[in-house]
Length: 113
Image (cartoon, rainbow, N blue to C red):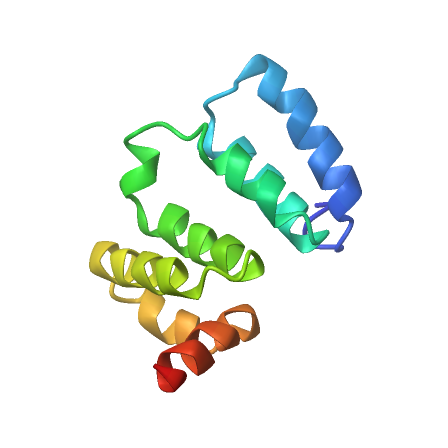
């Protein structure tokens, strides 16, 4: 609910409370990382994503969010790698990634190479 309304500080706080009860829940991890990232706190988002289980770290959603976080950290080459892994895990992600304004800097970086 908070994410849908752009209330990122509330989302961060609620996910932090939920994490105390289910620290490895992918829902909590993804939403807390998204909340940090949307507040311009991509380093904290990156740290939260490190708590994901090995199984979660193989999914398209994980790699896609990691790409966005890495773009926020200006790690465009790593972000591009994560986009590739997301597309490998779920080819439908490609269209989403190509139209995501947060990933635009990755495409600019790729053109400059």
